[in-house]
Amino acid sequence: MELWYAPTSPFARKVRVAAHELGLSGKLTLVEIDPWTDEHLRVINPLSKVPTLALEGGTTLFESDVICDYLDALCGRRLHPVDGPERWRALLLQSLADGAMTAMGRLFADERNSPDRPPTAMQERFHAAREATLDRLESERLRADPLIGEIGVAVFLGYLDFRWPDRDWRSGRPTLTRWFERFEARPSMTSTQHTLPQSSM
Ligand SMILES: N[C@@H](CCC(=O)N[C@@H](CS)C(=O)NCC(=O)O)C(=O)O
Picture 1 (cartoon, rainbow, N blue to C red):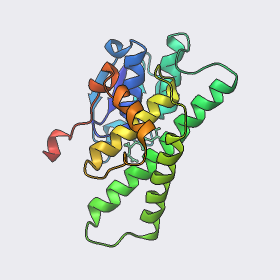
Picture 2 (picture 1 turned 60 degrees about the vertical axis):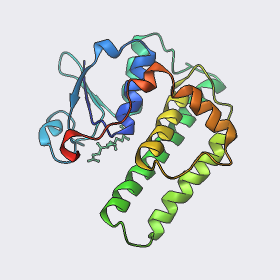
Picture 3 (picture 1 turned 90 degrees about the horizontal axis):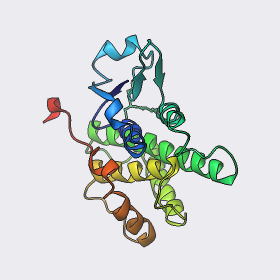
Picture 4 (picture 1 turned 90 degrees about the vertical axis):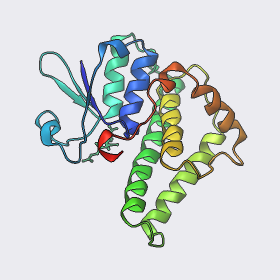
C-alpha cells in the first residue's frame, strides 16, 4: 500500500501513528508530496489532499478517518470499538481532534501569510476553538492504551508543538500535559514526528 503524505500534515501523521500502533507501518510505502504544488496526487484523489492511501489493484482511499478505519479493519478492529458508548466516544474524540487540526492548519496558513496584521474575526474563532478544545480535553479521561480518539488527540497536541513551539497550551492543563508526556514517548509518535519538507529548509 502506498501512503501519500506530507511531513507537516497532522492528518497524515494520524494515519502513520495508527498504522504503527496496529503493526502495519512496514506495509506502507511512503510517498512524500506537496499537495499544494504537485498535481500528481490529483490523478488518484480529486481533492489532492494528504493523506491518500493507494491500494494494490487501483483502489484509492482518502480522508484520514476512512483510511484509519480501513487499516483497523485489516487488524480486527483494535482502534475502533464496534459498538457501545466506547465507539461513540472514540469517534467523537477523533472528530474533535480533526476539527481542531483543520482550524489550526488554517490559522497557521493565515498567520504565515499576514504575520503583522492584527487577528481577523476568523482567526479569533480559530483561537477560541483551540482553547475550548484544550479545555474539553483536560476534562476527558484519556486512555493510556489508545483508541482512534486518543491518537487524534495526541496528533493534534503534537501539531500545536510543531507549529507554535513558543505558545504554551500546557499551563492550567496538568492532566492533559501528563497524559501527552507519556503518549508522545510511544514509538508510534517518536517515529512519525513532523519535519519541514526539504524545499522549505
Ligand atoms: N479531512 C481531511 C483533511 C486532510 C487535509 O486537509 N490535508 C491537507 C494537509 S494537512 C491537504 O492536503 N491540503 C491540501 C488542500 O486542501 O488542497 C482528512 O482527514 O484527511
